[in-house]
Length: 230
Ligand SMILES: NC(=O)c1ccc[n+]([C@@H]2O[C@H](COP(=O)([O-])OP(=O)(O)OC[C@H]3O[C@@H](n4cnc5c(N)ncnc54)[C@H](OP(=O)(O)O)[C@@H]3O)[C@@H](O)[C@H]2O)c1
Image 1 (cartoon, helix red, strand yellow):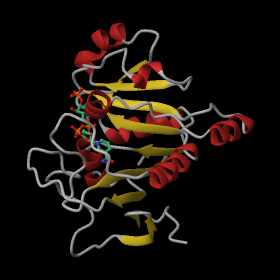
Image 2 (image 1 turned 30 degrees about the vertical axis):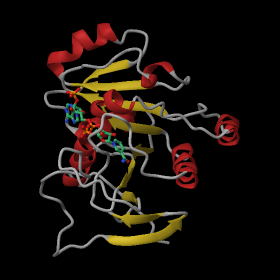
Image 3 (image 1 turned 90 degrees about the vertical axis):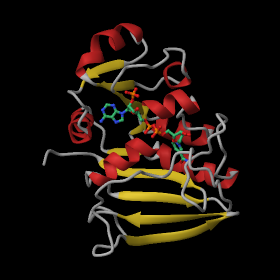
Image 4 (image 1 turned 45 degrees about the vertical axis):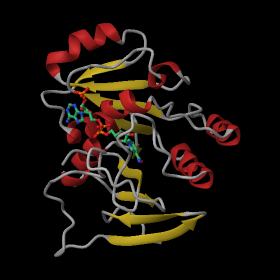
């Protein structure tokens, strides 16, 4: 396989495994202390990837929030926040989304071939739009990111994207945060849908760490030999 970055998946779910509710408002699953932990993980990565669905639905900034961590990155010769990366098939991305308008970090859009021209025009000056085939192959995108100098990638959702990285065996580590409540609404997105996962009853993933953070629990799973259980 082509060289790829170290891939760390990160998400928070309800006790019944939902990533969000169906209300149209962004559901806060995490708490302040955990968001600060996520900020630290972000600051240690070269790039952060979310699917186009998350860009549309959550309108995330994907910036390092802490001024101290931004300053430390700059002192190391890095941009204040990691490169932002998204993936789209149809190219329906708003150039006014915070993904494109906040921070100085580079932005890369892996776009399926049929929508590349239109998406390139729409996002001109806002992002580098890369023709990534049809459909976009996550392994190809990872190899391209490696060629652009990305050694460590954080994938922050959503359900569709997390499922693809997991089923393709393209993840080294999973940070799963459990929020202490239920969503109980089948219309909401679950943490991954159906699929053939490399971890199953006959091949269990390894728990590298558990940590209580206020009222949530972080479980860190090692999904490859590259992840140090230390
Ligand atoms: N709790 C958490 O930690 C967390 C984190 C992130 C997101 N979320 C939630 O997750 C939900 C969004 O999840 P989602 O599954 O709807 O969306 P998603 O995974 O963020 O994005 C899916 C979209 O990405 C594009 N895409 C993904 N793989 C592709 C491929 N191989 N080729 C081409 N395009 C590809 C497609 O975009 P196009 O439609 O543009 O073609 C697809 O519709 C939201 O409710 C959000 O709040 C929760």
